[in-house]
Image (cartoon, rainbow, N blue to C red; front, side):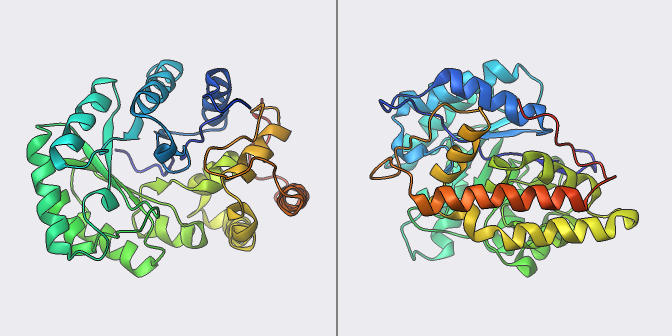
Length: 316
């Protein structure tokens, strides 16, 4: 890993109106991320509606992304699905065989809700044993319930040398700072923060990059923040961008991922806002109006950033 901060999108899954995966749309979406500066991709994650996919769909989804990326950037993907650790290890091996850089472990699939951290640690170590030398990572996925690794536990398991990726969703900058402190110096390990409300402070504390849903709206802006977060000459502009992400947090999360798909449909990237997560696929007027107003406020922000290195010309 170098010192450049990186943006790794949490990928959406495009669907056709009949509910099948839209692989042509997935190609356009993958190119959209790459053309707008993504330095990696996180496929088959919560934004991908992974729990609504069949095992074969998960594998086919990741394989398609890898084929489009063709080695341009690393790809990671979730893999510990199954009712037992042995079953999870089996699927981890299948995902890794596709060619991903690391297989990501959902922390909430390793313990029951409210089980003590000692059980989580034991299950992590057991899964490490079952997966030989496969590079792994963690994702503190909020659904169906969130299991956050303590900084101390993360530090211990990272020291094994098997963990190279962590997508953090604790929403607590002090915990993020401590996680970065305890994992500092471990070769190839990278912490990516999901919470844009403290993105600048997280990057300054040692986070390698950002992996956030906001990248499914404005990837070029997240990349710009990664490039300029600590540039003294850009201090005013960085503050504006950070505040924009704070102010627009609610609208970008409302009815997600359908809202993000609607935004990308308007941009011509996707052909449908269909999701499997929503009970109905009629997008609400409130959500459509919110996204339309978000576009206007984004245009206003770009006007305030005139003369900076924000790249707004790559959306295709």
